[in-house]
Image 1: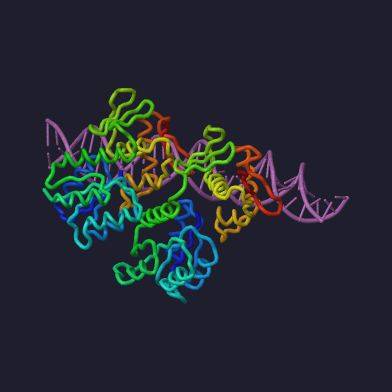
Image 2: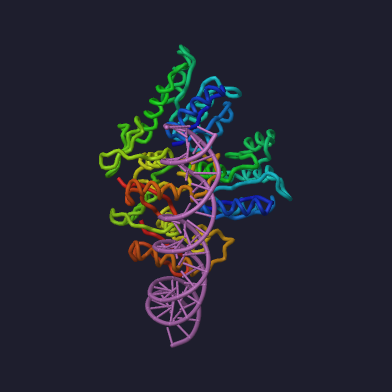
Length: 218
Length: 218
DNA sequence: CGGCACTCGTCAGCAATTTGTCAGTGAATG
DNA sequence: CATTCACTGACAAATTGCTGACGAGTGCCG
């Protein structure tokens, strides 16, 4: 999963990024409203976390522009405590959720999970397919009911494929969502990752469509 | 997908072309502003990537001429880093996105994908005709409801024909679309491709109009 | 501090698939 | 009936994906 965090305060941004990475999301930062607007408009994210008090362009304006341009990406806005009018405006502008500052990082994570899951059209925080199931709340993976250990990157891969199950996910998209596109890594890294994950999950769970990408069947 | 790349620096052009081809886009190069203008004005592309610093005619001028002539093709401009006024001018002139140089090729690809998706962003993602259906979002092809596997080139061919179903698509247009017309490949390559695809889809699905081209009936 | 385990990217060789080419066959057209 | 255009099977080249091995980096523990 790939998240855009629009937050100008470096300390806050850093701590959120750390939490997101730990939770298995590739996170990118936009430090002002202008950068946020452009990136949200031109790149693909699974979720955008938007602070309303941004330099250059106000967060609310950014959000309105995205929606006006038809962008559907779920947006969670961060507001100052008690800034009621702002919240209402945010919801009206098309935000999917909001969280008043200051907040517990855990709460942010919970809302993020909920939004991602809602966007993917799942009701439950548990992703399943055939013999494997992933509990996104506890970050646990089970094969035939028994828990197995996967590495952080493997976890990202399997959750992304499960969120998009039955869809052939292009290799380039996977690389985006696993690493974030700041990162120029060889496509072979992904292949190696797939091989390792297959050893743990069984060879049939992740299928290849040569020339297209990978997918997990329902 | 067919992309026009207007870039005069051979080394940069080559690396971009390589990346585009890898991503499955047929790519054509225009090495100066004049060629870019002419081709963009007379041929059909799904996207144009335009460097602003072109010989003969400046990229911005080219863009303005296209827009003045009513051409809607999405345009992504490449600017020198920090060239702020240029960017603003570019946006005002009708560019759909810009990317400052130097950039990571991955980032360019991400933006290209976003633009193409946005341009295509309407209509059902499922193409159908008779016994075959193609789910473009999942990138899967089904015959009588059962999935069949097709190669990347076969996939491009079948989707193109389905997008234009009931119309006889000239061979030259198909070759353009599949290979890009720089590429001098025997017309026989297409015939061989059609034969292979027919073996998978059934002989009647793709019909021939001798001397003209191929088509799929509603 | 040193060693051990683990993760993960890179490399290289192998295997499988895709795709272009060629040549011969077949079918339509006038 | 001759000619042109399209089809197809066989082959070879190119491409793409898989995997084992290696090693750099990191964190943990005694």
